[in-house]
Amino acid sequence: MAGTSNGVSATAAARGSVQVNEASRIDQPARLESLTAFAKFIDDACAHNGADHDTTHALRLAVEEVCTNVIKYGYAGMEPGSIALTFEAPPGRFVITVSDRGRPFDPRSAPPPDLTSSAEERPIGGLGVYLVNAMMDEVSYRSDPVCGNTLTLVKLRRTSAS
Image (cartoon, rainbow, N blue to C red; front, side):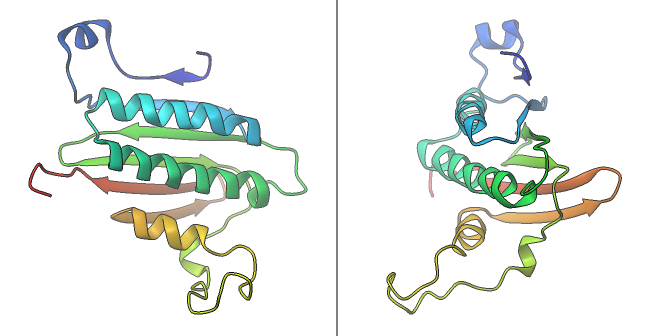
């Protein structure tokens, strides 16, 4: 597919290797229609790298939330740029970077959500950053005027005992 590089060689695929240390990357326009391509990219990268169902689900959900926020808020009122995802699987972890050139937003600055009020009394929104942080083992953010925004999501590999 145009805009993707899965980092899986034909030889490795033929051998049935489950861990690929090369980075996989996808670039898509910052549009809601791109969420399907991002989800497929995460599903494929997780499958190629031996992620279990729960880990794949958590990574896909976190990426969908982050990309939706970039599309709706990062590029709001601007011509949509692109969003790039990079997937790496070094030993013991899965690392996804989300890069864009929208407005900077440090998720660490988001106020904690109101989890005590009923759903009807809570304002709409505000749970996404909370959920991403709850599902990931590490979340870091960096904004640079030249390189744009980079959010890094880390999910540790589950061992058979966990």
